[in-house]
Amino acid sequence: MAKGYWASIYRVISDPEKLAAYNKLAGPAVRAGGGRLLSSDGRVATREAGIAERAVLIEFDSFEQAVAAYESEAYQEALAVLADGVERDFRIVEGID
Image (cartoon, rainbow, N blue to C red; front, side, top):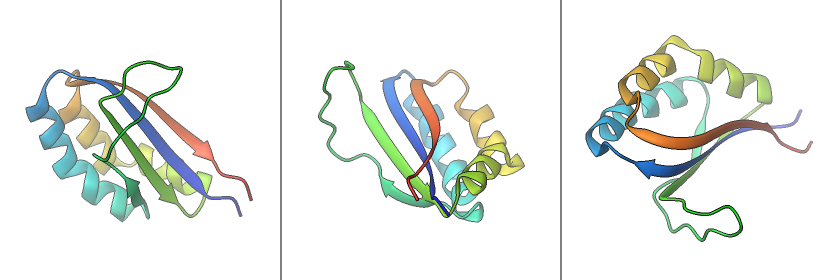
């Protein structure tokens, strides 16, 4: 079965306090959903697409698990706290089996 991934590229962090509050809720929500953090807050070398302040990659055992974790009540609470605190491109991607 192919793994699932959350790929999130932050273009602008306009409210670091909202991001910090989101991180406190999102981490446990992701772990409860079976996610494993692969990268966050490391160096980002942008090419072709422009500016990126932060890139986060999270791995799940399946695409379905990744979608379910995003749709979970716990993660939706984290998103509500984040609100308009960042501008990002968030994708759920199916890996290659």
